Image 1 (cartoon, rainbow, N blue to C red):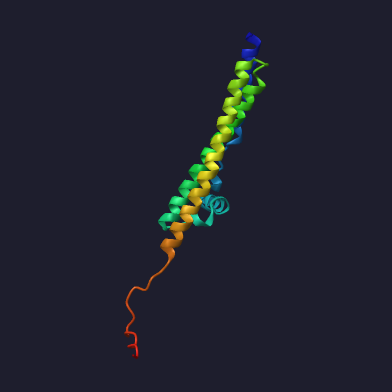
Image 2: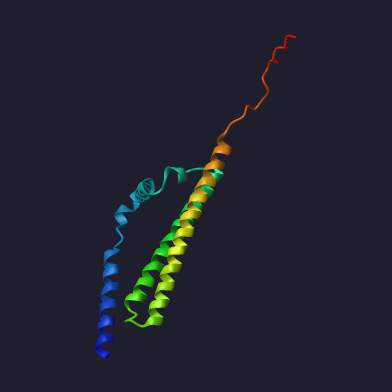
Length: 148
């Protein structure tokens, strides 16, 4: 038991030291930091989120990011259920518990997919309603009178 604890401690120490060694900061490249960040933003962010001041677009981006984050959490929950099932060693109560976790994760993913579809539809409708333009002033000349 003591051997396992010391092995874990050594492995954790090596991982932490490797992490610090791999994260060495290059101060000479600090001047190009903004270019690197904006280059990463250009490749990662959709065009709709870059400098947009349109409220439906901003709300749509926030909702999409939130739904994506929840989807990732549900996927991890699904993996957790699979892990529980694999480590249940045939115990019926543990298997049923793992199956319930997996069912809950799948139902959650279905709900998230439907909510994404609904939110996307609503945001597109709002964007279309906001972007429709109407004339600012009435026409300068009145329409001709109708001939009886």
